[in-house]
Image (cartoon, rainbow, N blue to C red; front, side, top):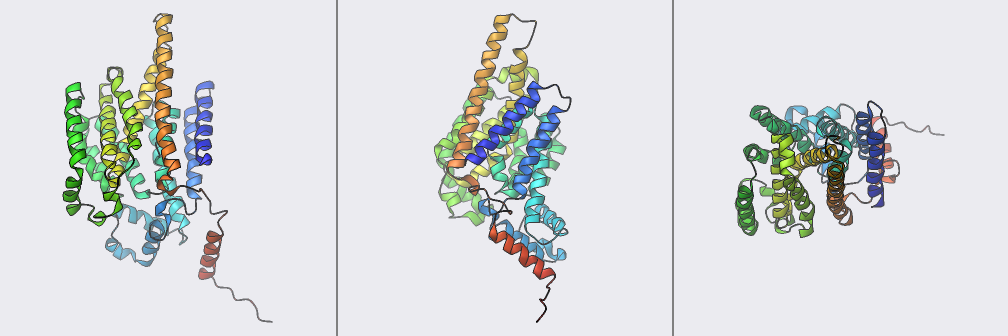
Length: 390
């Protein structure tokens, strides 16, 4: 557990020193490349990390791809975008670690470029994308993480009110995990101006859905996710402390709604996504299955917090306002940073203490005897060399 905590603290501290205490021209790009590059390496060489790593999960999918001719790939009952990607990786060999390396590279590239291109504060962007659990999730829910990161670029289209690019990106994301389809109607909800009245209506609807969710899920699972009927994903829920972090993050963004929207009125998309992130976390307290939908909203929450921290940071540096006002702005910036960082650390500790996504213990292919034996078996399978007889 300490490994993950120390890793986050060290990389975040390194990023703060590099991006805020140096004048190096390419410091932001260098930080993002190093941070996500290192996470990519750790993910590439992991062994038996993540609940879905086993032969019943992604390793089993890899075997199925190798046993199925490409002409019959439609017969594999998995999202076809992901299956086609596995067939591409198959060109590089049969060792299943190729799959984990390939997916890790794509995930790191999508996440790193998203933070570099769109997060106004790169260090906060890294801290949140790691701290909110996306790194942990990427080593377990591989398809869903890839789908989420593909969809994250649709958020930018939503801000620009470009519905066609938004829908195209969302449909592309659904070829990696069908849960992305829920984001199609969300485009219209993202555009609503979240006033106090609208928030009140949303709250009433949310509580109604929360208390009636068992009946709603019975209807939903008849047409979608039917394979989960009666499973613990439906019958059990997350602990209520899971909603602490999304509640705080939404409260922070909503409290500073005027500042965010004064700078850019399309930032309302971030605030709306923060609410729906909280909504699905709330419903997941009854049904674990629902918490996977929160992934699609978290990139917008991350961008919202990054934008807010940049606004508060700029306010304390404005030379044209009285020193007392700058001092007040500086204190507000610090307080908001502490509250937000604490919220992120809460969910991070929850994942680690409960071993969310099966990330503990972390081990690599370099230290695993099982993987070494498996690799030697593959070598022998390709080219059996008989020992000379005396």
